[in-house]
Image (cartoon, rainbow, N blue to C red; front, side, top):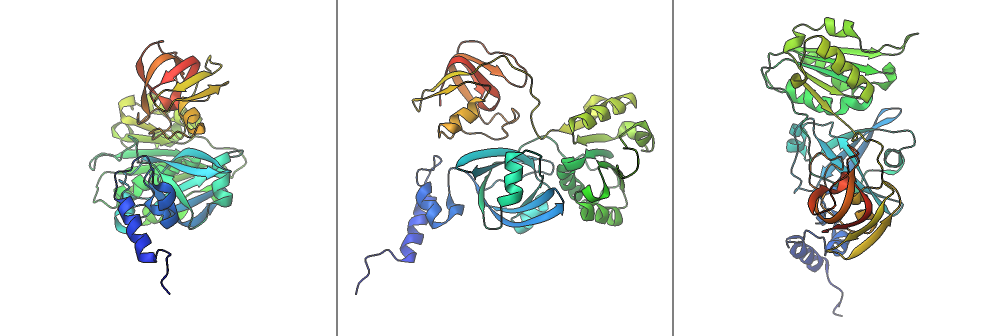
Length: 364
């Protein structure tokens, strides 16, 4: 009897034909997802290969992105997309692995701390498992490794160590003679993220000096001038700061007082700084899609578009990469980083940091 059902080779052939089409809007994605979720075209999928516990509140997620992913430089971020309870959520995290690992094995790692009350980080810790598929944006960010002949100082707090782990291991793989120092502040010994990696670096990399400062004692220990006094040639070092905002502000103040100017200080943030803004939302018309949506709070245009099932191009969601830049044809928006309103006419805005004020029309 002749079967009328498509055989596996035919399905595979069909998937390859659709996969090779120019389909940035993901028109064929529902079919491709059934055949192989790693063939989806609208975004770059990544499969979770493993989940490793680092500390009581931190896990490392080993991901295998689709082969078309463009890679990264040590210290950069990526934006993850996950569906949680039927709603698409996006968050930005630093890569904790090295570009060499990506080149060698095709995998990358994200080391993520559970945030109290955090929707996405809690869901990832509790639900995300090997075999799951999520979306992985292109890497971005200017937190780059120092030149090979440039001495460096890293100051990290808590989960701020994650992009620094990537940079330190990248630097250790080069034959550098310039010294590198890390001051790492954590609550306790049990909260050291990447402890084995750091101790291994200290053992096999003579130019690397490691100081881990914990609060295990009777009094909390914070960064102070005595820590900086112990670092030789401080004024000539490129300084990298990553951690809580209070630590970075204190570090910059102390470094400036020690003769390190701002041009030699690099910082990276996990979330955009925000200010209180004067906006009660408004009615937004996405003109190309002819979609209208009402906002009653300070939700950004990018989130509003995604809630209406639109898929605008985006990257960092922090106002850094400008991938979500879009044309506003009328109305006023407020920049939630600065609190400044735009003009009422036509101009290019960033969807991720723009909040509507009244009637707004966007070419999307």
